[in-house]
Image (cartoon, rainbow over all chains, first blue to last red; front, side, top):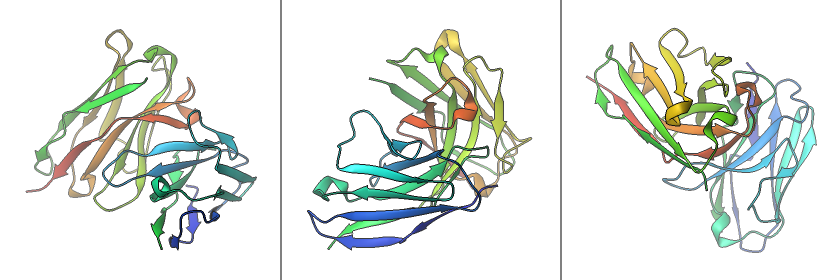
Length: 107
Length: 122
């Protein structure tokens, strides 16, 4: 199975900050890398697919980049509604696997 | 707007069986692959199973292979997960998830239900 790791596991940031989360795959996943946001008690929400494509309805302050094994999710200006857990997930091959998550908290 | 509504989650004893259902609306159900993804309490996300639009392609996580069966009824806009020989470690919220693509190997989860809790305990 392809193992996904994320860093940091958590971070504290202020409204307006630029935040970057990284994701690494144990082997290449080409550009088959997706990002999800999950708020407490809610289902995850797709933000970015195939590394850099913004899902419809997602604010443009979210962006993704990378290919191969190293990827990043950037929030250009953190908003109050962005405090959540972010997961990366590879869709290169089954079994699809997720990273452990990065918790973004309010400083 | 896509709506996915899971049902069937409950408290069940180890070794017993349970069937989850998911009713889809607001989407042309038979054009997309579907999946089940689970999340143990306080833990991360785990893909459980996926099925292509026509049921021609199906895949499972190793942890459930041989015990769980995914199926769909396109006429009823419904997805199912038959869970047999349940274990304590199967305890989780189970999400019904729509794929971006027709083939379950697409693996882009673009719409999620609210989840249904399955608790396996004696």
